[in-house]
Length: 256
Image 1 (cartoon, rainbow, N blue to C red):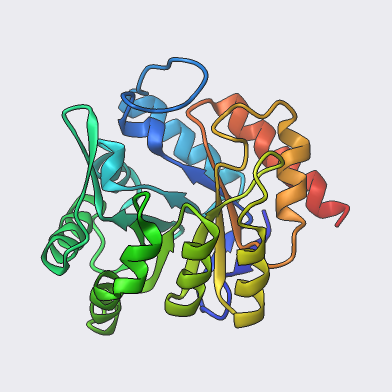
Image 2 (cartoon, rainbow, N blue to C red):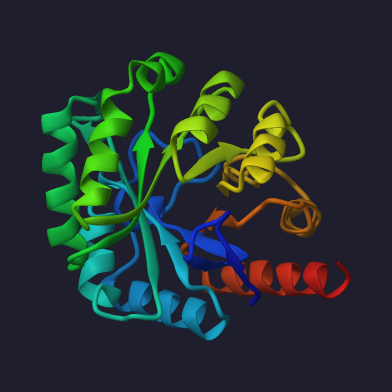
């Protein structure tokens, strides 16, 4: 699997990353089919397969239930892995709760360090709500993450955005940005262009439209071949799906 530099960061990540929502949360998700959480053994096997396929980035968040803690227990001490996590959103009693205050962000980062068993978190993203542009323009949330980066607790800071204006704002303020991009949703495409011009990293979320896109190979090929894309995050708990996704990315990059 090709490793790519995230913008101007020294951090190198695989062109395909593993999303982990299904590692720890079943409620309030938008996938087309129901699923059971994997056992510890199944999850260990999945992560071993991902590593064998050359994937080195896993994406998680406090809002993904037990995902952070399970990842930390299995691969927190493995230097092969880069881990991206988030702050600002919790999923409690069946609904999302948001808090982007400096105190909440600092507490969340400390919990993530403990859950993931990492002294330094590779990537921390603001897990933004629908008022993402206002949160970024307020500046306090990003400033708090940057302070923690300066203290050596975080290597890179960014924002997972929902709209074009917020994506462009994140490019101005952060080391990297996570945007939705897939064949059905091109609204944040200008963010990719702006990030590439500014030397900022880009992670792609919902590349398969949360499992609703039919032609997975074509969707992944389109994204991994796009200039400026660092890594495409695809969530799965199926070894077969993971192997197919990796094969599709390798084929696409071989013809790039």
